Image 1: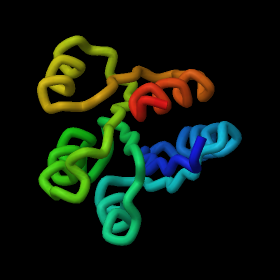
Image 2 (image 1 turned 30 degrees about the vertical axis):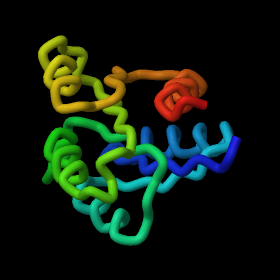
Image 3 (image 1 turned 90 degrees about the horizontal axis):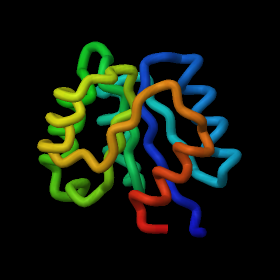
Image 4 (image 1 turned 180 degrees about the vertical axis):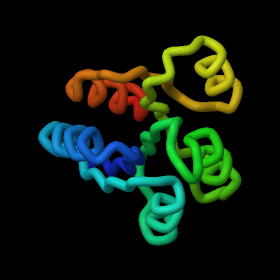
Length: 123
């Protein structure tokens, strides 16, 4: 497996560190960001293979972040995973209608998340 790059956006410091460390242990190159605006700034110089984002964040939620990123043709084909505590059918349905590849609820085992990433990248 080539070194897969992941942009992981979550405002929960502890979770962001745990997921980042766990994905690195699974062989992924992970760039963490604590908010949508920080992630947008990272995307100015870094093109990940996949993006994972939380939904409930300030000042920009995951839905808004997704829509801003997907407007840029350079990123339109990058798979997106929503990793969220929102276990709600309507939120999941809306995510799928937007075009999000996977909607995953927290808590999640990092090894399972690694499999979801690989599945989204057809690895």
